[in-house]
Image (spheres, rainbow, N blue to C red):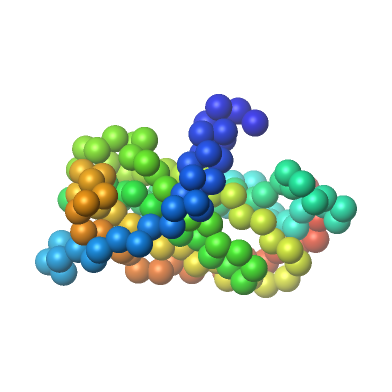
Amino acid sequence: MGAPRLVLALLVILGAMAPGAVRAAPPESPPPTVTRLEWMDPPVTTPPRNCEIDCPAELLLVEAVDPDSSIVEVQVSWSTGVVFAHTHCVQGTRIGRSATLQVPVSFTRPGPEVVRVQVFSQARCDFRQPAQESAVFLVPTHVLGAGAGR
């Protein structure tokens, strides 16, 4: 696992330990939005059948921006799981800078799946500030069985 993936994995783990319950931002501020959303290495598959520990996950690339705040969290959910990926402002606190995360997603069974993505932002990455949330973005995905198509 390379350094960027290790950092992301740590951020995801830390994020899962402290899910973001944040105050809502004033409605006059434009919400954050997702600007890029794609699977890193299609086709999307389940982990190998006998894998129980450190199973490979699919990586969903999520790029998001808020024109007047900083992206602080990405939430990804699907029928059998959820991931809270906190950015911890590694993209910097400059207003309007995009944040790009590779979020690990692991499916338990092949077939159709709808992945839901929502991003959250706060002014200058200050967790005392009210948060804004994006619309929910849907990623229809057909999950193949382990090893199929690669």
